[in-house]
Image 1 (tube, rainbow, N blue to C red):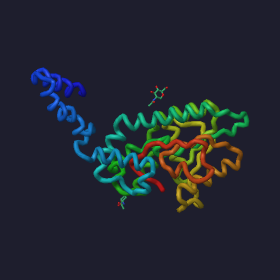
Image 2: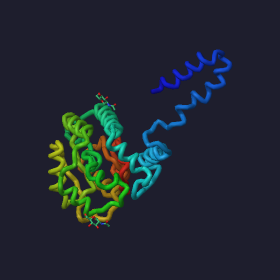
Image 3: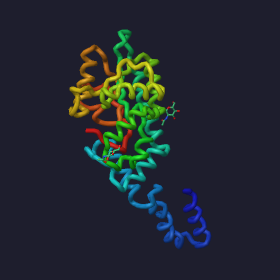
Length: 261
Ligand SMILES: *[C@@H]1O[C@H](CO)[C@@H](O)[C@H](O)[C@H]1NC(C)=O
Ligand SMILES: *[C@@H]1O[C@H](CO)[C@@H](O)[C@H](O)[C@H]1NC(C)=O
């Protein structure tokens, strides 16, 4: 693709006959590729939405309830294309690189925490039917999807999970899902290939209405008080990772579809 303008320039040089004459036409021809942003969206949406996505992932955007409507096709392309898988894979790789530097203690208290939705499992099939996050969250609809226990694993997360388990980390699954979804959640995790966790922690009745950051921090705190050393934490939301009793390293997976405060 990029050789096309070069060939045109070369031809002009031949046709133009003099270097001086052709250099006048060189400039606009060389600038040609930059007039297209190289994205498939055809207009400014691609540029804007890539910026919005970066701002959302880094939390510069703060809280949001829906994706910008102009970004539905961007989010669809990102989530269903190769970029999402590659982004998840590199995070897995960095996680594993860090994990391999941990000096494991024979006391069995070296721990790693995983969130469930958009971290171990992907709910992409659900969000494909719900505008990739452009619709307002509908709890009863969502609960119906959870009950199906059909969410697939994110392959790179499954690889990381198994590698950490093999290295001797105790795995804690800490999710914002409710206690009444325990059976469906563990069934879904197992069907997706996840086994052998040390604990599966869900929101109990007393956690209702508590912000995710507080709920997850409190649960990590209980683990720390129980003698666990939380080396790593993997989540798609900042509220999975921030607060207190935080892991030594936190790993943020991409999620341009929804934001949990
Ligand atoms: C992740 O690591 C694997 C194994 O080393 C490698 O093949 C793959 O290219 C890496 N992926 C990325 C996105 O860096
Ligand atoms: C949520 O989804 C259910 C179907 O699962 C539907 O009956 C209900 O009207 C929806 N609620 C809103 C506020 O859209």
